[in-house]
Length: 496
Image 1 (cartoon, rainbow, N blue to C red):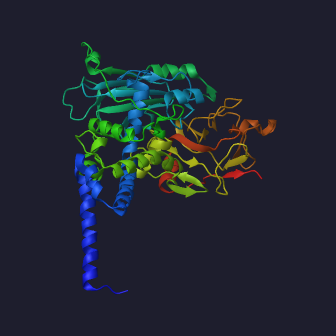
Image 2: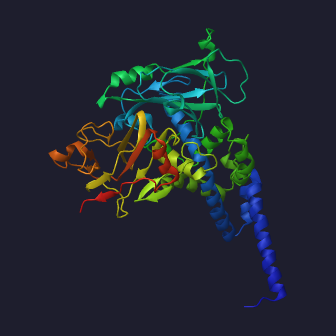
Image 3: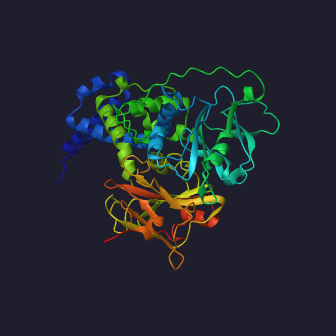
């Protein structure tokens, strides 16, 4: 078909007008809604589609920060805090289904007991003291509000002999007491997360683990130096309104999906992203009304854009829960080397915040995930599976390895009659096959007395997934993250 010159110019002029009007609708602020009265339905449809795509990327970028904001509310600054800011909540036991729900924390490790402490570093540094554990594995992961594990104490990083460290906020200048090592934080708020191994010589020794966890201390530098402790600030943050309190905070499920953007704005202005993201990314999100230094105001956002933002906020967590992730080997998802300290790898950061919040860096811990069987089907309760490891995942003593089972619906451990949530190096009676390999039997009912030592109970109905992991992994074990075929990754095989 040929266009005459007049027809061609008319088409160009119409397209130009449509673009100008659409861009005007994005930039008029409070008058944007009125400007939409002049748009045609086709313009509105295009604007909504474009805004949804942009909002989904903004939610992918900002979701981890909103998750940390919600976890802080749950654990530290909400009406029922587990511990106030600059103090440590110490879990009394492993992350049973009940304790997992209390913590609101996804995919927990059940070889350890946890501590959770949100620190406000705006007034002064906080001193972290850790003990000599007499050879028991422990470490303290230190995470910024964007979920990057930017420092560690204990574990492979500083060992198990103890020490004293100062956690300092951005821009803090001052002198530290003698013998105190400085750790600079990229955000004013951070999370410190101790993990202490509960097994000694193949047996649960909760008393020993709790003694080590209790010896991990947090003190403001004033109090540590023998001065009067500073008064605790008053916190008046908007409370997340969850649509389902039974879901973890990383589900990002709000009664009003637009609250996601309000919380992101508050959290972002309090804990700004790195400068390169401020320069390169934030201008792209300005059409959504999302700007550093300004409160996000839904009334100033065009209605078509607002509708798209609500849909994106509602969709982002369910999408991330099902998103294929990393390298796929034997239908297992092997994460990339950026896990734990993500840099500009926003996709991995978003996926991990949704499904394995505060995952560690590979130097301290390796993980992978199995949600599919060898035929590519989701793992489901009521079915029977086997998983055969040619060898254990190598670790450096006093570390450990394990494989743990979780409910896909809530990312918590699964209730079962024998209260067993994992198998691994802490399972002294794990039976080996004649060739030195070992097979794990994954099903809801007993596989028989001769196999019960290797039985990992699954739910009777619900969908589930498995996480193999090693703490204090050897270099050989870490290599699987950068080269997923360097080791044998076991498939989960459905029993026909």
